[in-house]
Length: 173
Image (cartoon, rainbow, N blue to C red; front, top):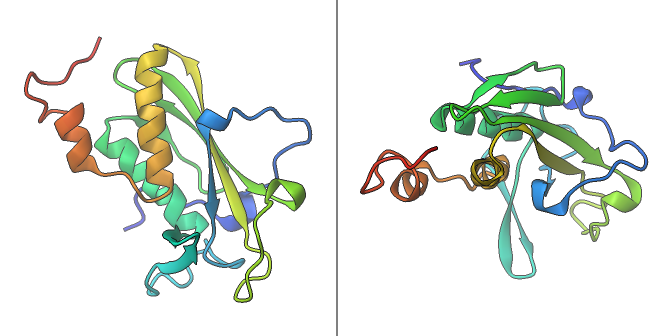
């Protein structure tokens, strides 16, 4: 269905000049092609690309934003989504307030080696910032949500380590 964040590719803008980005709260994601994110090509299988002998998943803007909103639902994080806005306000049940933003990395910021198949791959930067609340809890959510943006979030392992399946229950303050 149409549930969740389905960010349109035209809504994503480059990082503003002189904008400080914390490397711990930012992930670089290579897009599948320059023309993804408007719901086109959803029937295609996820593309894979070999980089330094490790497989890297190439995603569309639509997939990235939907992965984030799906992870928020699984983590009981309330989000205010707008498909025309590359940022969203998030609030957890522990009252940790966050903001997630998606930027396109252009020029020197992209700094990806061109390949014969894709001369200039489009790179996205996904940034998560804490606005209010416990920093320890925020860093756990940061890891989970940035992993989700890359398509690497595993709800099963989260539940065993920190969720409802944890032996002594959910350890929250």
